[in-house]
Length: 382
Image (cartoon, rainbow, N blue to C red; front, side, top):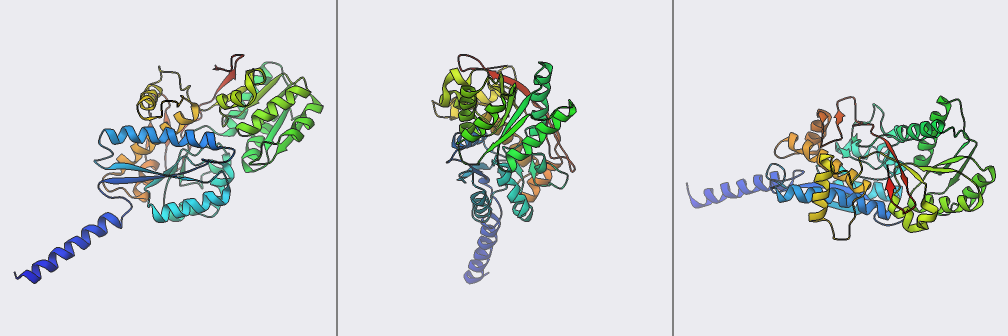
């Protein structure tokens, strides 16, 4: 074989090798996982905790050698909790960063628009652990989204059942005026109907705003015994303070998407005291739960020193653990399609105290819900 022929064969080999490793979705040394989250705007504190939970789990996996010998690269983009940005950032991420899967997006309307435009379906890519409990994203036609948390309707049923048990029947609803708020509102209405009740008053506030003064005045004028709040941190905090200043409402309940620590920081323990919050994850302080113990160890090792244990970061830690298991089952050189298929065939998987099930016809992992309350010291208790 002459030198020219040998050189040509070497070039051909290099072309094939580079094509396999660069042109594919991931290569031997790296697996890309993408996340679009609200790192700015009214949901910024939540978005940053979502990212942190996934990040510390990926760091722990990389420290142990990665997935099948490949290290994880966690790519994160900020959508500011706006629908158009979620769609744009997701399309760009899929095109430019070429992830094998997506994790932890936020917003019912945001994720709903991804489905409407078939962004995930056309890319053949899975999104796991979205921060939404909307039933509309959980139908049998949903093939690309894998849920970790219970639905807003599951949360609504738990809250209404608790209030009725306490003989509280005059219940109002405050909700965000968008698909997220409407979906959870409908869950509360449905739960009330089971007890032959209906809301005594309903009021809204606008997305990406903390101005709840009109809602507080409308609901305060009726003076219900309890109000179920469907909103994000700043709006729930401002409404709680305002409605308590102008009415005698006995009980306030919020769905799980709020951060109790942030509520206390915004309005102080005096106004936060007694606010009930539904939770869809085990307590991040329950070290008797194996996955919580693992989460705490990872947070202590890989999170900034000032980071606290929260339900939100725990939720995305668990989502990251489930996703990594799916990628492992997809085998070497995973692609979006292989990971999607592996997750869909996972059946029973227990990441350590929160059993989950997925199948070809089911993308809702579990329905865990428990109720908590903020005490007079601003601490969350069960």
